[in-house]
Length: 209
Image (cartoon, rainbow, N blue to C red):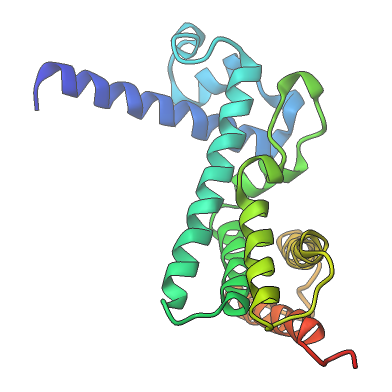
């Protein structure tokens, strides 16, 4: 590895450390607890070093949120691929729900940053529909409708209902409010499977006849 490559690698490692430290502080202490000084103390660099990578806190928060959504979308992509080439649109829709929940379990700090930050207009953090994730789900629902697998007059509305279902259960689990129902991550994922199946059954052609 040459000098230039080594320096670039080191730069990326520092940048990643800054983002992860900001993520953890936001998850633990909220927006008010985040400062360049707090990040610097956590990664044992000077605040001046952080400003070499991000011009201000707003830019850093935006980057953390974007990283979170990119990671979640990658979870969704991998889960859909794992479902197999023969999976129909309804099965792919279920895979997306599983991916969302699994991402939250394995990336809880990112999940909290994505959805628990207070609205701060000047930060211009993305909404889920701006990152491509929701649009992918909507398109999958539309394909399921076109294939005659489910009934839906409004694919976006159906996708949002599914999102609310999985997100609500996931949030309840992560905050310890489902301990009487599920005790482990494996049991929780089983609950998600059941929830997605129940929703799919409700939309299945002829189910409401």
